[in-house]
Length: 395
Ligand SMILES: C[S@@+](CC[C@H](N)C(=O)[O-])C[C@H]1O[C@@H](n2cnc3c(N)ncnc32)[C@H](O)[C@@H]1O
Image 1 (cartoon, helix red, strand yellow):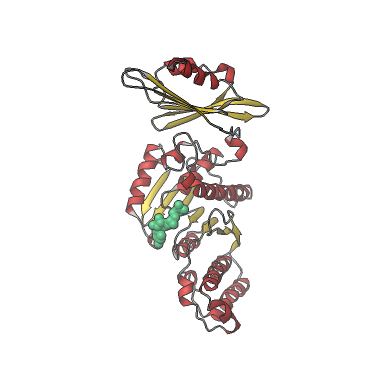
Image 2 (spheres, protein in one colour):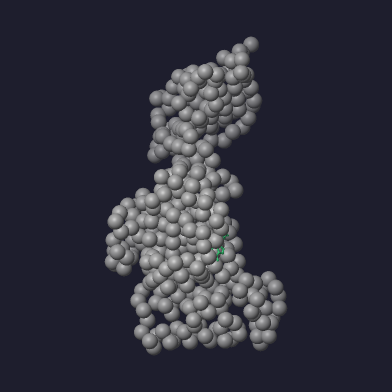
């Protein structure tokens, strides 16, 4: 009959077989032993024509990913360095082994049909690397560098934000509409309603990877957010370039700013973010609005043929959303921004998937400006509403 040692040898053998290995995890430590890492996660990945062994090593808050040849991997040596637990999933079985406090190996082998996933993260076209330290520190990913299922949608949202931002920054730099950033004069980015700062850190680190010096300020009215986010910035060694302020957006000081972002800043907080961007002459503005309440409260049901729409609560809400963003986009045009409204992610990732994308062109000449203001007024008068952004911008 197979002993515990035989079964462990079987499990270790699978980790060197690219056709059978689905995943393996070495973790914990045996008594009086000090393996190098807290955990090592292995899986086969397809890189070009070859299948390599991917090792994700975790120690304290550091996660590192390396891809090596299967032939170079020595599972016996790794296991004997002192790990206490081993999990090996092959295409036909799941094996778990653990050392008891008395140093006895307990091994279980179960038949299982596990499926290999050879996709390399890079082939998934991630712009934000899931194995980045910040993603783990903020709770977007687990220790093995996998995006947590509950955070998948947020991850996609921030990734699409940076995907849209980068070409705008590059084009503006090429046209010299933005000053060339340097370490002494980095781009200034403000993320309004930053919450847990997923977008704040993602944008900062992504632009740094593109050699675009930048500093980012996250604004949120919640003091606990400021505290938690500052701690995260310190622990990631980013305290000098990523800062957080607890304040109302409408109350936050004016500072010269290149880029203004807001991802799902609630209700009129999006209007405050847009107004703040205009007042601070931001060159690029990307805001994905959240719930819209302001206009719904003002819209009457007595609007001629449109009464058919607004007497239905769902249709009224949808129409209110559309009108709110139409007013916002138009007001940005009044202030010289080339503005459109796009879907930044599919609606399966958030029903709030509209984004107002605005880049500063030039101040409009008086007559053009008056034309744009009239278009805004005509629509507002028709609906007998005073959109919040118009009020703040005094139009
Ligand atoms: C829905 S959360 C989105 C957080 C983050 N941007 C994200 O996408 O994960 C909205 C955040 O905006 C903040 N907020 C709402 N209104 C605000 C205001 N007027 N001034 C400052 N922060 C505000 C809230 O405290 C909350 O953290």
